[in-house]
Length: 74
Length: 379
Ligand SMILES: [Zn+2]
Image (cartoon, rainbow over all chains, first blue to last red; front, side, top):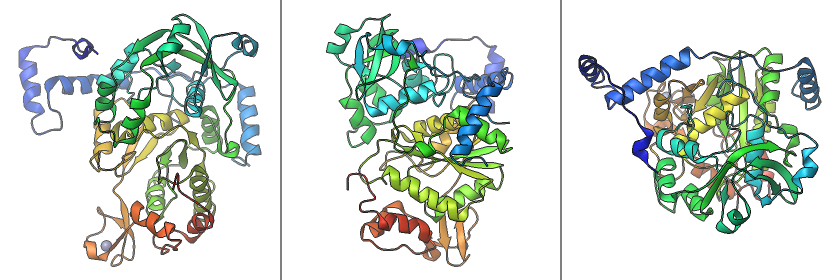
């Protein structure tokens, strides 16, 4: 399935690489790439924009009606 | 505020009414009840952000990284298998109709048809190639090609439990109407014993609402039957839970028994229903001894961007010295003082028609099981 094609390389300065290598000793992270990937995903998730839920008033009323009929709402 | 759906957007995929007639003229593919249910799950946001069956790029990324091709966490392939005969009649670019039980369920825009490696699939998803694993055994029975593309739902799939069936759009409005901002989801495929009750209630102590979400669908021999799971959950709920802080609705999909990967999948589904938290117990979605007892909890440390907070629990047991239901973390006493809620032991006793001690199972729950002619699948 071409596993090697599912990874790519990013250059980072060697001193930073070494610093991370030291930092992850004794943690659950087994490699610099896995640590860097984790940190980047965490960062990106924090800054993701959120959209409003697309409920129209009619949607909401129709759904509430069903929820009441089923006994989920009084 | 309830969690956003996975992927950030709530997108329903419902076909326009006029397409129902057109669907009858399209190339037809017959699907199983499990595939029909999963088609509805895709269309109704349960599997958000999926809008159809996976194409090769998503499928391979799921296997290798546990993520979709847009890097969103996703651990279980949602795929449609076809054999050579079928792909002789279907072409990439075609609109086809998916039929269950002679009723058109969905249309599909065929984007890609591709072969796949079942061994690679098994090793990545189930972490084993053993045919003793029910998920692997089922995978090797699947046809040899996959067909990927977006779907649109034409008709809802019949359910045996319409009064318990809610879609994410509905649970989101329900949670909002009840004023719940933090909601914990609980996955179950069991008749609840006292240990389950304590896990749920401990979690509920810290959030606004508890969403009990039994999984209804194909299971392995020896598991509780669907109607028993619902009736026992209801019996417990009715007699022992605060109505304004808990609710039950079903999820219809098959168990994959993929342990850690399925735990992430189960969490994503509950995020789509609007849950902010998800309970992960010991050996979640495991089977036999294929996974370590806490592997399904450890996998969550790989996904800082999951968007739902897992709550990890150790198993509860009854301690005679504490005089209550406790777990390893809060009880200092030894094994000799404990009564474990072992699923196997409970099943044995129930099969013999014996009533369980009240410290293990609430009498109202036990009554439901003991009154049933045959509470287990295929037994
Ligand atoms: Zn104790």
